[in-house]
Image (cartoon, rainbow, N blue to C red; front, side):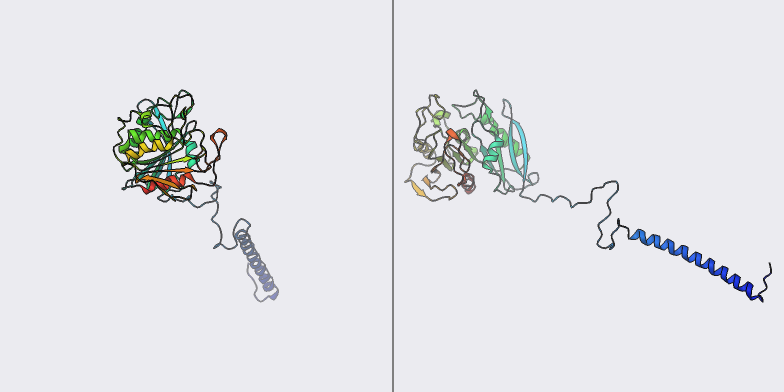
Length: 349
């Protein structure tokens, strides 16, 4: 069609049509821009992308979290392990250094023997010997005793109270730990009640493997383990005997019927018994009463350079720091027997 440009009316109509089309295109573009703007500022997106949290993965709706902290060297790794004592399988709890598999220095083993009618786990909770120590240098062991004829879990102290091979169990624990990490050749030991009797049996029968000992609340004559002549305790071993002054289960003044009623075994006074230990540890010197540790609120007596005892006033047949129970006499919550035990054992080299 031929347009007559000389006709002003036609030109105005063409310009109007073009203007209309241009406005339509512009409106469409503006609509698209507005739609994009609304999307960018939707409630699901942050207004400031610099401060925004990363979007949640739709596959995993859990927001990202910081990684768990890596344990530092010196923290414990707790294991429950089983070994054979030559007669049966036995359990023990061990607190190992976190670097136990790669360490190049020897760790010191400390073993705690529980009382009768108790267990490794209960003695662990009672004493908490592992808590104040750096596990980088120490291994804390809580072994489980065996049930005797009475059905109570206890230790074979030689004259009582089970028929278990506890010496074999002790040896098996050391062999097992030596297979895991580097250990010092001698171990430090403590025990309560039946566990204290086990400590004394080990002093007699495994003296070459004992660094130091802190028995609490029980003792026995050497001839109750074996004959005094046969007890091969030839080297000196630092011993701190701790006892409650109000212990009616094993009176420090001795008992005609012994620790276990009707056992037929007479328990001598504590000092009579400790004289045997003194003889093994270099002989008697003038006893010295000294302030040692405020944690138990009682002085200790040094019988010679390697033999000590401490009688805790107001303490019954209960671990110092625990509540007393009925027939076992009073307890003292204001003292910390575990701290005193560790202090003595860690002083020995």
